[in-house]
Amino acid sequence: MLTTRLAKRRASRAGVSLAELLVVLVILGLVGSVIMRVVLRQQRFYASAAEITSTRADLRDLATALPSDLRAISSAGGDIYAMSDSSLDFRLTTGISTVCQLGAGFVVIPPATLASRSGVTSWTSAPVSGDSVLIYDEGATTSISDDAWRAYKITAAPIAASCPTSTKFTATSAEAAAGIKLTLSAALPASSPQGSAMMFFRHAHYGLYQTGGRTMLGYYDCPASTCGSVTPMGGPFLPYAATGSGVQFRYYDSTGVVTATKTSVARIDVTVRAQTAAPVALAGGTRSYVRDSLNFTVSLRNRQ
Image 1 (cartoon, one colour):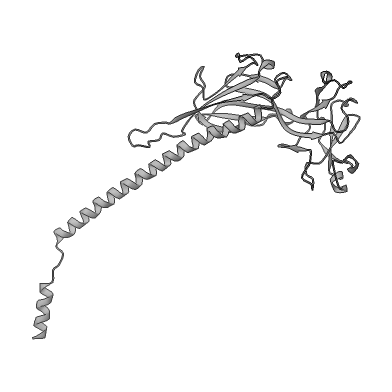
Image 2 (image 1 turned 90 degrees about the horizontal axis):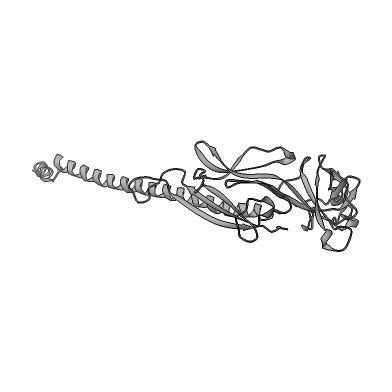
């Protein structure tokens, strides 16, 4: 009797038919498809947003790097070697220091690192043989009319030499022994004594160039008068054109008139036109390159 009742209960339980199972599977498939479409759309959106962000970051980086390098140019002092609407060759300041000691055809400068952290020697790239240096010449009189920066070439590899503590540029014997001797192409005049300011410089270049089918802004410098390979500073940018180049330089004199005379440049206007490295589609539809631009002005500090 009990066995019969259990059998009836099992027979009366509701099951899942094949049709119902198929309906559930179809619904799950539709839901999964919708979710995947949303996920893929979000991935495309964030990839496109990252591409645009990277392009705009390139613009901001150039707006920081270029003025930093160009602002110190002395056009009247011959710092501009060559200039065009898409490139600029110039004298780049790489460091500063002070004459600690001088002799026949050489100077000794303080070390770049001091315990007091108040050193007068600082550079982005240590000088090498073949680099150049400007040393301030106070002239024969107290008038500023005969003051000038004199250019010298470093003719031998820098070596260690003494910058005595008596000069007050160093505080310990170890610091004094870490002075740096620079052999120069000519002896300093008496009007460039101990304590004279110094600036190290070398030839540098900014310009558009093609690589891998893309237009980039390239940079190189020329330590020891030997130019290195081009390093991309940003991009891709629009290709070169008479108007609308990816990077365009314009040169103005002190009156605000466009000039082609290197020694008359007082201001450099830079226009940068960038585009994403790959097509993007933020709102769906056709994928295309997104372009952005930036204009900034660099006023030269040393126009005289």
